[in-house]
Length: 289
Image 1 (cartoon, one colour):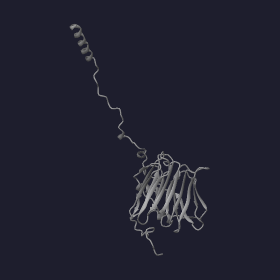
Image 2 (image 1 turned 135 degrees about the vertical axis):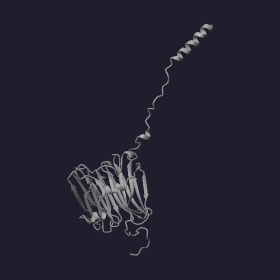
Image 3 (image 1 turned 90 degrees about the vertical axis):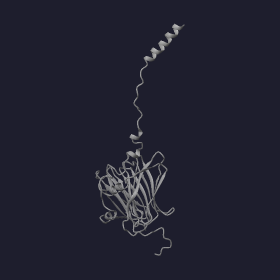
Image 4 (image 1 turned 30 degrees about the vertical axis):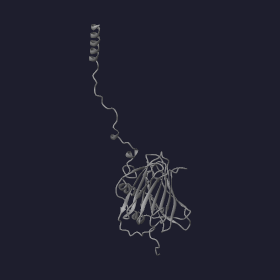
């Protein structure tokens, strides 16, 4: 028995001697901090693309002074066609003589194809002009503006190609910080009275873009409203300059799409302390005219 026990102990000792040594394994789990964890990180607002290359450009007042506005009477439709495929973005500027502005802006590309459309409302089209840049890749393209206001409310329209160092480049150089707005959510951006205008960029990762942009001055007091649709928010991002005269201005961006369609918004001050003596409309009660 003692001999059998000794043989068993020797066998166990020999088996342990042939156990393979444990080598340290290299970790195969990816360090997520080394990679982009959000599509927003890969969608660089203001970097690259035909709408955001270049620096400089013209001011809004200079654009109006050097252009020949077309009068669009109430209830009428005007179109601007761009057959040159090299024109990849177009400036759309609208204003009135101080009356309300209510218009539909559409981009036509081929028969029955409307990849971009907007509904624009401005309470005072002289105090707050509508200024936007829309993408027009792969021409020919046609921009259609319909004045859906009454006959007593005409508007002036300027539609022209945007240069590489034009309005979109100016907006992209200012609005460089972006944040994600999930479908059905909203973000508000209050601004100081010294801010005369605000730069806005809306885009997606290639999905459709449905949004509503509002300029509020006081509780439930909409001074400007833009309802926006784009079939591809990466190929056709939306650039805009919203003028914010007076105090108490808040820009509200609402993603009206379902939760599966987030958008990426950049909203920042465009012009600060321009030296213009804006009237404090909407906040003065009992003003004498």
